[in-house]
Amino acid sequence: MFVSNMISAHGNDVPNQFVIINDNHDAYFQSYVSIVARKIEATGKVELDVNKWNYSKTTSKYLALFLGVTNKDIRLNIESGEYTLVDLNADPFRVDIQSEPQQAESLEPLIRMAGNAGNLLKTY
Image (cartoon, rainbow, N blue to C red; front, side, top):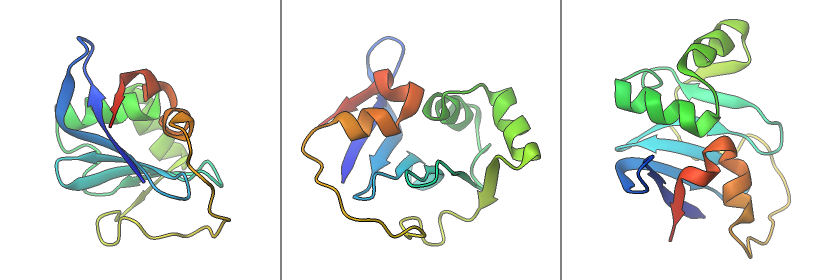
């Protein structure tokens, strides 16, 4: 599992805004203690937390960076059904798709799964 702070436009760690990559290479966006979004590697499906996806301007800003889209696109993708609203905080690390565990020997999966936000991440 990888955990990374998001990085501001000025190159600084953004407090309380994280990207998490699990062993299945699913990517999660966490704001403070809440899971806000999940990208499922095996299917490309995007899930947003029904209660937290638009919680604040800061959450919305970093969610858009994580997804690589604008805030307007997030709303359009919800309306079109491309993004699904679910309760990600009831069981945030559930695994819906069974896949073979993969060796995570580099940070490439983190950057790839973080999408367009990859250049805004700092890894540890």
